[in-house]
Image 1 (tube, rainbow, N blue to C red):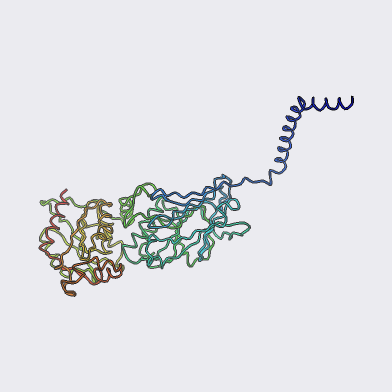
Image 2: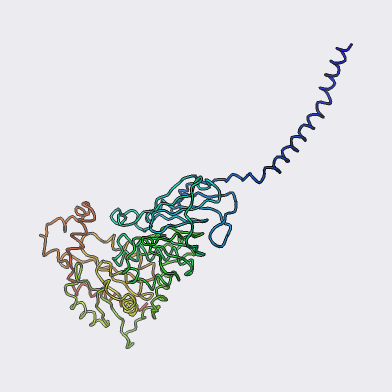
Length: 468
């Protein structure tokens, strides 16, 4: 009977009480879990959620590594709570650019820029990015003279360098190596990209410059001071450990001597850049003259002279012909020895500017709106370069653009080579040898003797454009 009793007890337990015991067990486990969390919560931290994505959507392609955990971080001297973030656009054809948020430490006279993660491993462990902060990354010759930086996060128990100086403003790190010293490249590779990158901060930004040239900074000091209220830090000679909460390494660059408003912060355009220059150099004229034959004031024509290659060998004839058409003529050379502010005033006072394809035409940035640019294109199939470098930018600046392509008789190359030479009959054969060969022949060895009779119609057309 005892055996039967035990069996019945077991069967009865399995039908009803087993359910009750199961519920009790679940409740008990929950109570134990809550007690465990209450005891050990101070020692636990949420695991960061990593967001690593590669977007190949045209111009906005970028690699982004970002902390999405929302965990607070103590950054800088102000003790602000910030999120660690590193965004790098490494697919743009003109320049690489990285933006960093969090606790960023920049050691002077080194090639390392650190970001201290809010939690260990927040930025994909020991991930590191290399960047040369100059806006002509596809040009190997230019990039040889540009310092490379390593951007990386601190990992594990690695000790971060102690801050010597905390900054309450963002930083922009860029190079003035490459081709700087050539007026066109000064603006195309540095000044226009620097405007696009930093003007959004309204002067509250710190510039850190590598590959520095004191004469270059002195020449463009008015522009640099207008973009930043703070003294430039020479990265290569500085020994300080600077700490920032936001840093941009590299410059935004869209195209030659111009800006794409759809890709720039706040929709900046080349008209905005030209307005910025007018303010910087106190330029008086915003618009070109609206020419009227009955008015006493004559339209001013600026001839950009050159003393070496691509010079006008009969400049005096051009001046006389232009004066006979009613122009007041100014002929001068744009060179690095001139005071930029004074030359900007001269350019701004003119209504038409002409010159052979070359860096001097970069001064078009100082012309008043609706002025006329006449680019004289030498032999050598250079029309594509001419339009890309100055034609498109001129139109982006709301200038009237004209192009005058010289004939063989107007080139001094006819004095150096026979007429059946490949440089006349097959310029592409020279181009195929590469840029050094093309430059040597068509840019360095060629001067221009304008046919003033043929060129006269171009200057008359420019006058018509000033009527409109």
